[in-house]
Length: 436
Ligand code: SF4
Ligand code: SF4
Image 1 (cartoon, rainbow, N blue to C red):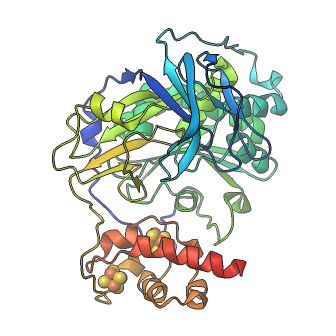
Image 2: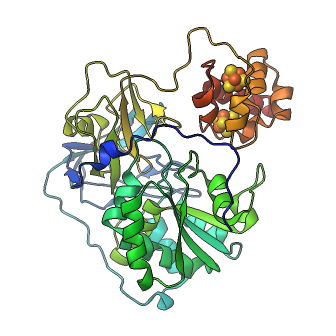
């Protein structure tokens, strides 16, 4: 059953900018910066020291608990282990490797055994050891998500919606390597044993849909569901509702309604890890926006500084106002282009002006547009008022913690109020009040 989710918006998508160049360029930087924290959970401890020689694919950091390893994406010499700027805005302990351009690689062991001969422990171990995290932005360790879904789901979804404007990294992956995604889906189907396996994609990706549909006869049991293009179609809860009609209640996880959602890039990484023995050391990144000379998608080594990619895409316009990691709706503005691409970086967006920018003297017109746009059925105008009044009791009553910071309210607000910014602050206020 297909159902529409509540709210949502239709921003200008601008996706054609980066899909005009169809041949991906592969970027090989002089130096890579591998943050020891690229996932939700405990950071890794370094497994190498300054002066060590490392090979491409070598594990250079790992840890205990909710943690997955990080790997060298080039061969070369470790020249520093120190805090470096990170896309989160924090300084994060990182391993800096000077590339020797030899690409000496660790031995990768392919595994072509029939799926039924692979047991779950073996697959989950391969996913963990490859350092796989949710590549759509969540960066939750893939093995842990798969393990916590075992025996609890009947629907497995591959998220190819990529609903944020400008970003075409997943679309490009599906156009060029759809088999990797579908093979990854077979692997997780084998582990999770769902009744239904769905690749969900928005209808603005005609070429990708065609490629997948042409392959589906070779993958019986996998279906494609084409959804109308509407932001935030790719948000986990909204996607589940669109595909299954089931609503994930506030504070609940997808398993509560029998679903697990993984991004298409994550499935492809799972395939490469389990079948080819490849750790997660590269990904597709969209470099786009009106402020970049040649928007396109690149195959990028994890750890590549943003400035290398900006340069490879022809450089920035003189009047560039903002460079964002991610999309214009949910991405994070970057002050320093020395930050590296991490596992969850799908886009570097370069804008001439801030599309969701607040007015200098914002005024609420009480028009209610933000309420109609909110896919979580929240009341942004009142939340905004209570953040300003410091009323954490009211913010809790209005379920501010359910705000996923999707930006639909800010986008639609004619008064140009800084809504999302204010809700980030409000959520922090509620969490601090709860601690006390
Ligand atoms: S959309 Fe903006 S102006 Fe309209 S009610 Fe909401 S906050 Fe106020
Ligand atoms: S940012 Fe939060 S309040 Fe605004 S539309 Fe999204 S979920 Fe609703």
